[in-house]
Image 1: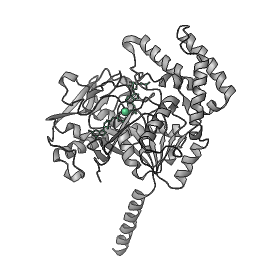
Image 2: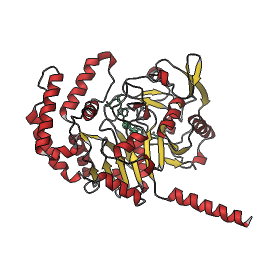
Image 3: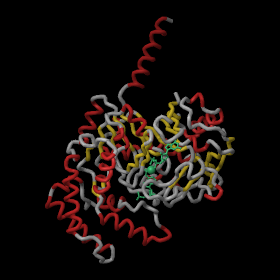
Length: 444
Ligand code: GDP
Ligand code: IMO
Ligand code: MG
């Protein structure tokens, strides 16, 4: 008996030490992006030492509220708002230097120091004006079948990387190499765009040499070593995913996806960190579903009859200003995302947006060819052929925005959360009931 008591004390001590100990943690979006990753990364950065972006570029858009201040970030990790952190743009990111410099200026004008805290991997690829031009050109030519990209040049930049003709951040500092790459790429892109000289070599070269000088002090040739050493030194390292699982260019709703791997393994790869170094993966999940751009959306509602108010939910894209499409919670998507990411837990955001909805629907399965699926069936991965199977739940019809403890949530809201946990096969660890840092609670 005595020995059992001692054992249980030891186990408890171990659990406590693990839960307060250093962690390397990945935060990913589990739907179509805009799940509230920026808010959750800012919240979790409270005790993080290093925050790393591993993929994507300024197609991402995160709105973060800190007190009365609202910040919109596209490239710089959301953890930059905590002054004790070091932030890294990893090798898998695609960087538009103009946007990055604007973001640095915006932060500095708000009194947030960036110098000596923000580091860029030389492996990261550079978005040039011809990538943006090509993105728009290709989208326009697809007319009715366009992807609905953010037109930020993300796809063409990643295509150059895969085709081994892209420009890396490190190349900006090698004059001959850089000028050769730009000359060849400008000629190629102008030809692809119908022989129209949309981009001039001199313009691009001079502009980017100027950017390179301004960014020189941020480029760190051992970023990946720094991250590795932080993990070895038992610091808290947070990897910030951009976009969402179903925008992943392998497992998303292809071809209506982005051009990077948005799942946890992709973030890891882009950060140059092996998967064995990751302790924890959080899937950020909105309490309903949204999507910007084109592509299948099984639980989408007609905006004219949608009880979830776009304005209340501020469902307007940060990057492009487009209205987000809105639908009910889709447990098939999220269960699939939990598997693809190996998520340990869910951060459920925007619960407050459902506060005044009398009847809430929850998609629990996809019906296809006489069968009901609880994860996305690969054979119909474009999702256009499935029909959603819904459960209907009574709403809680009371305000949750001021609640700070899980126990104080309305019973009906707790049941909704419990159902999400069961259907998606992961515990809900964090619940967010508003855009601000403190509007977040931990469910033990
Ligand atoms: P991200 O791209 O995943 O970081 O998400 P976005 O920032 O693009 O979109 C999420 C929006 O919802 C932002 O305007 C956030 O400020 C806001 N937001 C995040 N969490 C909550 C929440 O729990 N409740 C409400 N009402 N807004 C939230
Ligand atoms: P965050 O990080 C929502 C979508 C675009 C388009 C598709 C391809 O804020 O969650 P791209 O420009 O990447 O080639 O566009 O991906 N998309 C996003 N949707 N949130 C994002 O990022 C997105 N980044 C890209 O709307 O449908
Ligand atoms: Mg966003």
